[in-house]
Image (cartoon, rainbow, N blue to C red):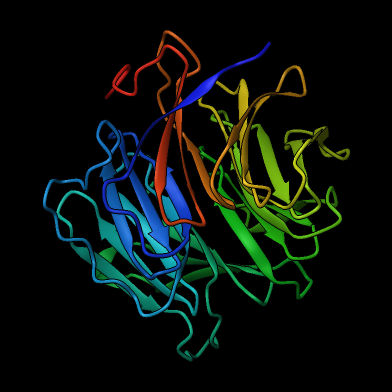
Length: 326
């Protein structure tokens, strides 16, 4: 099978520095964060700011390195390079929560690097240089209050963390290539994967929470089946010429998506274990995200963000961005 994807349009007002995170929401908008400290929301049909003429939150003085959007598309959680975590209400435009994770508390300071909202929106997970996952309240009235801490037993920098769609697990990846799976309810580490030889930059869950796709500086993507305890590695995908920086899985679980420092985006047929399309971009691709609801007439569409600060929309050949809109 071979798929063709074409460039649909760009955002109207690009970021002034690299896009380090992008998420296509169920409200058919896209949220992006940048190394220039700004966070923006776009209408996917036009690439214009959403709502029209909206005032985005004031840019942070340092870059924004992590982004997580609620399943209902109403709130976005983002984190700065030094650990200022913010919760943005996408419907009102207000920042309703801020937490300085680098500030010393009775539990000690643990500056957040990567963050992930729980699907319920009640809590969020964060990881950092200590290699742990800390769970905090995501409620505006006590935003940032520590709820629990999950330990790997190793002090390796946490590069990325993400809740499974069912909210039952948290996946954590580290600078040395390990991936840890935690049971949220039990508060325990259940599985450790050593699938990569170098830092794992990004993780993506399948919609049914059974599969986890990882992207690494070792130029590979690895698919894991979290339902099995004996290794759990299902497949390895190779083809990028440099670090793989971002990854996602389509809503139907058929296609993988990856962005790389080799300035390309690849679409993978998960069943066939092969790349079925390659799209060239202008620079390193730091963020990719499938449209949550693909068009019925084809493979749908995705969004990307990279080194030039531009958010770009791509669609399957013959499929319009407006098809299947919420």
